[in-house]
Length: 189
Image (cartoon, rainbow, N blue to C red; front, side, top):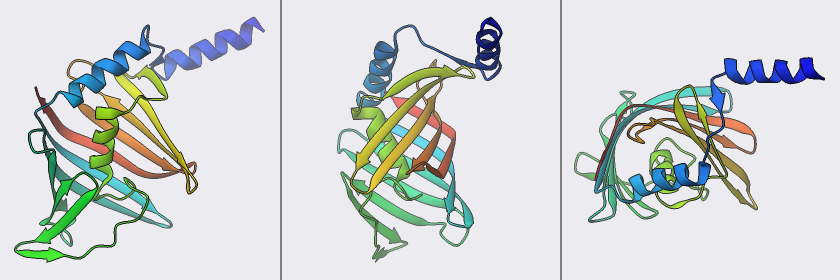
């Protein structure tokens, strides 16, 4: 039995995972940083795993607390570069140059490259994570949403010094559907 526990401990240490001494306080501090930010700017690379296809996107996203609005611009791939979205609450208005685009956003929110950033930031601003830990020097937060349509899990990783978003992994009914790797994230208090 002692050998099993020491093996588990070694595996835990090798993966860079560790418990945090006060997860509720750490989660509250992260939530306060996002809820109190007057502006959030980020550039994110998003990989979407849809059925047998993998697609890579790059988005630039800006959130403004004074108007509670977001602005998103698709930067890659070239086929969607320049498409913009104005975001207010759950309403997305997409445009390209001067033309407004019609979209068919899915009922389940936060599961497309176009809206994943908005809903990850919403979780960071308003929700209590189900689990908090540290991994590879980053703060890890696990959010879960369960509905009749299934279970969505978001594993979100933050830089500990600034709470800046570093990456997120999105799962729908146990299947990974998206990875977000943040190139830059700035929270302006």
